[in-house]
Every structure is written in C-alpha cells, then in structure tokens.
Image (cartoon, helix red, strand yellow):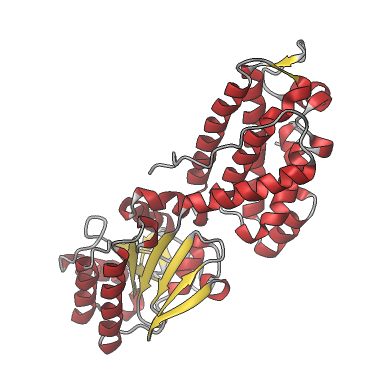
Length: 389
C-alpha cells in the first residue's frame, strides 16, 4: 500500500506577513485541491435483503453513506451513492435478490463497466463485496453464478459472511462450515479464494463481539488499484496507522520544501515565507485523515488562526514563543536556517495531525461543534507547545 501520492504544489510565497484572511483563502483553496488529489474509492456491495450491507459499510467507513450521500438510481435494486466528501462512491444493491433482479443488475453493471474503461481509474469500480448472512446456512447455485459474472466483468470479488456470532474468539461452527463450503466451490474470490467471516455490530444478547472488519479492510487494500488507496485510507475509520503513515509522508515532503526555503537563512521577520508550505501541509493532512470536506470553511478559519494572528509563525512570535518548543530549535541567531525551518514545519505538521486524529475520533455531532469553534486552534497550540501529550 502506497501513500506517496504527490500533493498540490505550494504557492511561491511573497515576503512579508500574511493576513489571516489571506491564509484562510489559501487554506480553503489548498484543502479543495488536497481532497481532489485523493480521488475516489468506488465499492459495489451485493447481498440479499437483511444481510447487513449498511451496518457493514458504516462500521468500516463510519458514515451513513446512504442517508447523507447523494443517491442516484441506476436500475431497480441498484443505487449509486457518492458521499459528500467525494472520497467514497458506493453501488448499493438495495433489495437485491438472486434471480431476475440479479440479472437486471448484471446487465447494467456490464454497461457501466464497459463505459468506465475509458474513464480515469478513480471513476471505475475498484472492488465488490458479496455478502452472505451466516444464518441463511446456504449458498445457492444462482449466487455462485452471480459471483462468477462479477469476476467476468473484471471486478475483484470479496466474499463476506456477515452477522457471525462468536464465543471466546471462535466463530459459530455452522458459519465456519458455510465458509468452507463456499470455498470448496472454486469461485473466483479475492484474495486467495477465501470467504471472510465478520460481525459488524456487537450483540449484547448473545455477547457476540465485533470482529473480522480489519481483515476485510486488509483484503480490500490488496485488490484495489494504487490510485484508489489514498481515498480508501482517508475514508476508512478502522486503521489509524494507515492514516498516520499518510500524514507522516506528507509531513516529510513538506519538511523538505521548508528546508529548501531556509537553505539561505531568512530573517525571523520573513518567517511568513514558510506559511504557504505549512498551509499546503495542514490541508493535505486534513484530507488524508478524511475530516468532513463540507467543514472546509471552519477548517480554513482554524488553519488560518493557527498560522497567523495570536499563533503566528512569523516575526517575533517565532523567536520568543514557538521556536523554543521546536526540537533542536535555537534562538541564538537572528535567522531561520534550513534545519530550523524543517524542524518548525515538522512540529506544525505533527501537532495538526494529532488535532485531526482527535477530531475524527469524536462522535459526528460533537466533531462538528469542535471544528466550528476555537477547539482546533487551542488543541493545536497545546500539542505544539507540549502542554498536552
């Protein structure tokens, strides 16, 4: 899995301090570009009514896609949802059953797949999840035919057995038997012909825990094209380490740019030269964590406050307040060197990544309140100055 996708180039900075409204405008522009550069991960989900499609999708992607996204009917039983953030497209087989409706869906999919072959890769279907409820205790011949037809279209099909109860880490024996039976059919399943057992919602009555979701996500990463992995990393909510690695890559790239700015030492009074690089960096980090794109205005305001005003990275504030908190930062000279510029940018990026992670972990309503207020600025400063660990 690669997250080294180049981001938007930083605008060449001009000398002098940048006003907050200028930084806010630049940040909003860079944020839109950062989201656009991630592309879109398109997933098709198939399964009978009651198999738990919405529950599974929400558990992996953390959003009510069908409720908050813009749904476009494709045919009877098939709707395409594009999440407002633009990072996830979902073909949902609502009410799908094998038989006539399955044939209708396949006919439309054949047309869609053929049409998409001339489109950019991020507009194609990248993976298909085929869901089977364990309690059905059977897998019909028509279901196998449907899976083969999906594979014939060039779609990587991942078989998911859903709502599987378990005890002490051991799935229900009949669910294991069903998986073994499906695997014995020699269906073109990815990866490796396996059927994955999952439970996306804890059941207090049976004490069955959530399990199998990380394995499903890992399997999905294995089959999607590289161009879709950045969007998948941003939109999924299970694997925080993948998000952190994406942010780390962005920070390292930005540090190199900032060090280039400071290659010829610049006066503290011209420290605003670093701001455009840092603006681009925090915009890309925000997108990499998949924070709501529709909160771009509030995020832009927060980013501007971080880099200007009371928390400016320019002039005396660096020398007297922030620079002493940067690892290796020294106030012994009157200029910012490449090392100091890089260290300062790394500290800004690291603190902002932690703000994004904190925000993403909040419940949606609480997250919206946090992003709309002074929380991002205050938390950033707490992380940056080491007052919060």
